[in-house]
Amino acid sequence: MKEEIARLKGDSTERILDYEEYQSLKQHISLIPSENTYIESRIIDFTDTAEILINKGSDDGLKKGDVVTFGKIFIGTLSQVDRNSSLVRLPTNKSSTYEVVVVPSTMDLNKEFRIDSFVKSSGVVLGNLESMEIENMGINSNVSDGDTVLIRDERIGDILILGTLVGVSKNPASTHKNGFVSPIFDYSNILTVFVKKD
Image 1 (cartoon, rainbow, N blue to C red):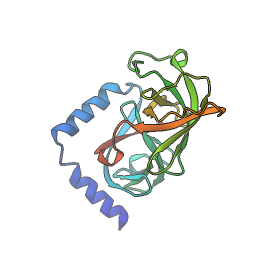
Image 2: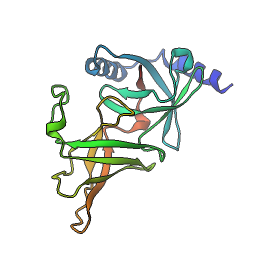
Image 3: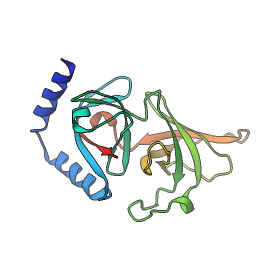
C-alpha cells in the first residue's frame, strides 16, 4: 500500500512543472559530467528524522547506497529502496558522517578539477538533525566562516558541495577547530533530485 501511494503521488506530481523547477533541471543538467547516468526523481515527503522520500526505486535500477545530488551539490545517499520509492538519508541525519575538505569560497568548482592545492583543511562532518557539525579541522589551518565545504569521501566517489562553513571555534587551547556547515539550500524545499547510477 505504501509503495502504491508513493507511486501515485509521484505520477501526479510529475505532471506539474513550474518555471522554477524548469530552471532547476536546466541548472543540474549544465553541471553534471556527461559520462554519468542519473535518474531524475521527485520528492514526495520529508521526514522529521532528516530523510526524504522519492518516487523512484528498485524498478528504476536504484539500490541502497546510491548517491543523490542536485548538480554538484550533495543531497544524501539512499538508505532504503523499495520497488517504487526510496528513502534518502540527508547529511543532517544522525547516522550521517562524511570526510570533507574546506576550500576558499572563491574557488570556481566548474573550472578546477584538482582541488588539493586549494584545500585549507580536512575534517569530519556529523549529522545532528538541526545542523551539520564539522570537527577535526587543523588548529593551524586558516579556515574561516564563508569557506566552502566539499564532500571528499571514498564512499561517495565524487567531490561534491556540502555547504558553507560557519561558526568556526576560536579556542586557542584546543588541538583542532570545530564549526558548523550551513547547507546550500533548505532540504525541505527541494522539489527534484538526481540519483547517480553506477
